[in-house]
Image 1 (cartoon, rainbow, N blue to C red):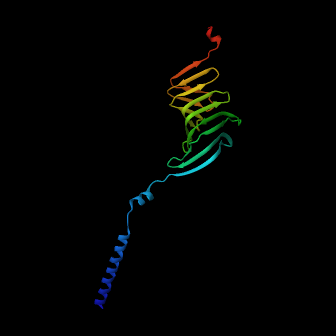
Image 2 (image 1 turned 90 degrees about the vertical axis):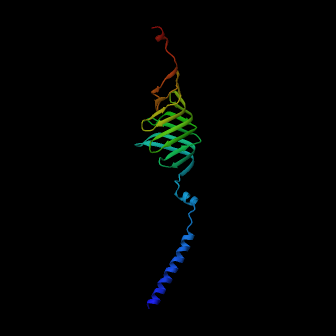
Length: 192
């Protein structure tokens, strides 16, 4: 019985060793497949003919229209508008106070900020116009700002700032860093 018992144990170990060899030979570490499985993937959603409304406590604050949008899911989720965008900003009485156009925009959802580039134009209801190659919009503060060159035109002012600017969303206050330009002064001020 002991001889038969040892024979069975030896056969068991031989079978286990033989089967284990198949598993070892069958395991192949393809580095390309491992890298594909473990690589960070960015999820992207896309949409066309966008019309989006922004409201706060039941009051409409803005209406965005764009031909194309990407929503990119990364550490900081953002909306990208690579084919232009238009935004109408509304005052508390639901009247348009400012219009904005840009050829490119990126809105960072968690920051409530948008980076606008390429021919950015902001016009308020009085016709005052702010232009810049790039501009940031802070949704919470209702402010525009840039460290780039910007130009501001009204009926009687033409101001350029080469080192940046900060403005309220309705353009009622525009502050330039290192401004240059012309300002029309009434005749009554010339005579004093």
